[in-house]
Length: 518
Image (cartoon, rainbow, N blue to C red; front, side, top):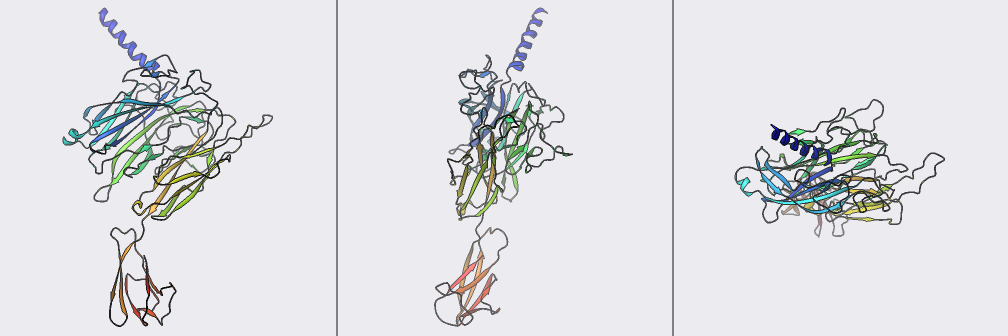
């Protein structure tokens, strides 16, 4: 009996130790891509976001935070679980940490909690730990599995979360179809999660998800957080996956209502097409979990959209008071553009950062200067700053898509405006989309008959988009319009034609140019 009591007591202390101290996890995301030499071999990347006030991970240096070293697979992603999405576990994927990066947005005069010395002047810090691994799926595909699931369970979520789920397990996963051709790559998340947001200030964020490998269609949704496989975390009322934190509302408006175009924005708005997340946090000491799910879609051989992959970014948001500052804004009137393939498009991206004017007798602080960048989301496009010395920057985006880049799906990129306010920079990120329209093309046939008569016909190319309209006319070699003493279309007796095919009767000999527009 005595040995039984001691054994139980030791086990209890072990579990309690994990739950009470290892609350260093602020978020994570998993991405994947197939090998260029074998499309059944996949490279997996796991980004793990560490709270630098929590335990350090796997003996890292510097060791800011608590004195505890989170050194086990339960507190760091040294391996991921591979499953067939239908349910059966297939094994594990060994992961190796390849980098550690401080992503805290502080001004140059401040030191985050992630930096040495560990008593940095800024009370928060966020590190991105990148782990990478490789998995060979050939034998599993041969045995009939096509849709795979890669997951991880870590301990634990932060003790300071105020919307429920504090110190619950941290479980996340991705799914993808490895049988679809060409082999799939997940969207790359080019913008780090900005986990520290300012109370009562508009917040604009975009993960910068781009798929420059397959150019699959992406859709976005707010999704539940998980504490284990098949087990969602518990939310404190009124919070939920789709209303994860307190946001500004006016009058009788309430969740799920939202309006991203007001000043300040109302409710929590997620654009399902671009992934723009827009809201105004109003509870100044809140810490909440927000999960964004990104689904990939591709047309099958019947033209039907099918889901070929899903990834998630699980983020913990920390709301704090940011006195004496207005966040920068990206002030474009429109964020959606279109251009014909082969044509050029250029437009400016403008910013604004209003000077904060406090109530008297406080003095007005100096104005902030804005830095404007983009995530290079569209290969071949250019982005340049037009006014480097200005306080509020303007960027110029230019692109000339070629004929092969015409698509029914828009291309996207993000622009990020960051001010230099101390101690914390304010950040705004917005998405821009460009639809590249197909060029109307047709083959033209001309048959010669006797007595100056010519038969003309337009044949639109295969897969022509939309309903074609036609226009024909004739000019001389100087492109000058002619009258009926030279030619006319039969039987309409007109100088032009809107038909797919028609007949031209020439009355005088000479050289002519037949123009066709579709």
